[in-house]
Amino acid sequence: MSACNAATSVISLMLCAACQLEERIAVELPPLGDTPSAILRIDTPTESRAWALTPAEDPVLAPLPAVLTDEATLVVASFELRLEQLGLSRGELDLAQHTAGSPLPAPHAAFVLDISDTDAAPTWTPRPALPSGLDTLRVRPGQGPCRALRATTVALPDYDTPGVLWPLDDSSYFVGTHTQGAYYRVSRGGVEPLPALRGLPGSAVAEAADGELWLFGEHGRTAHGSLARGFVAGPAAPSETHVVDVVPVPGSTQAIDVFAATHTGGLLRFDGRRWTSLVPESEPIGTYSRSMVALAADHVVMTTNSAEVARWRRGQLTREQPYPGDTREIEALGWAPGLGLVAGAAIEGRLLVDVGDGRWTFLGAQGLGRDGLGLGLDDLVAYEDGLFMTGTLGAHTQWWPDWGYCEPGTPLGPAGSRRIHVRGDGTVVVLMDIGSASNGQLVWLDR
Image (cartoon, rainbow, N blue to C red):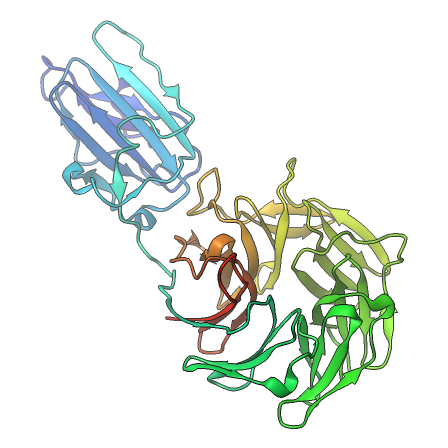
């Protein structure tokens, strides 16, 4: 401790039982990092008080708090969130108002300082987690840009993994299943089975330039047509491979031109007439997981049911491990304006951004504790100027620039998601997978 000064590295306090009011002690802050918020708590034998601070701006408390005591325990923790994200304002907290709500997130840094008349030079001791006194503090986080979404759920009648999701109009979707090839028109009002289409491939769908739909599925089968005219079989993929996902080839002028992923990790290209294998059979990508993004006509990135992603670029295949130094499985890949290619980890749900040359960096951690969201990500899509994500056991959340991760919403169902579609009005439609005892579902999420 030292004499009082106005530097932003100290918190001015009055800590003595017998001193005059003009005698002030300046407690130097420990290294809290370049963080936007911190909480300081002081416990004495007679009282407990706490303050919300902005250490990156001006941590000096004003007006000067008077804590008259010979001994005290100070605890301080800094956070990656701004005070408004925690639902707090700068200044002294009314501890009686912070007994209910959400616990504080994991701190960026935390320290304890014990002051007594027997210790002439007390020092801050770092703590790996929230110190006692802050671990019981409760806050009501602000919502910021996070959207509160209301769910409308419609269950599918057949117990079969759904794979096809395509918007038909403003109120209904074309939905198909993977194994049985059961098809439906689904709206908020219910399900209309389409028995004439039963047995068509039902793993993935793409739209041709003329509005015709192409369906892809097991044993390499394809079909094309429309609900009005019906569907006819198309050229099958080689080796009876199971096509599990397709994405349009960027910039193509063909009526239909897609990259196709197979269940064994193969990467193909299909133009409506012929199939082309892009990865030699002797060099498989690996078991395909669930996400593929086409960045250019010669550049595709895929998940591989492992900690690696596979990147096919200009005819060459490379593998990268986005999550540094660990084996976090990567299941979610997506593209978002302003961010580029984003990957999500299956265990913690942390997001990483592709920065080129095989390197990835974590997306801003506001709202995210050190242990992550505790949400295994299945899918992610661009959502306005942020991201919408789904994950384990129907979990879902959002990420917004200058805010970070939102609190996960109420789970959508007992299983993960299969497809996501974001409508122009901001409604999110999620095709949910089957659970151990539940059919697939289509969920509308409205603001």
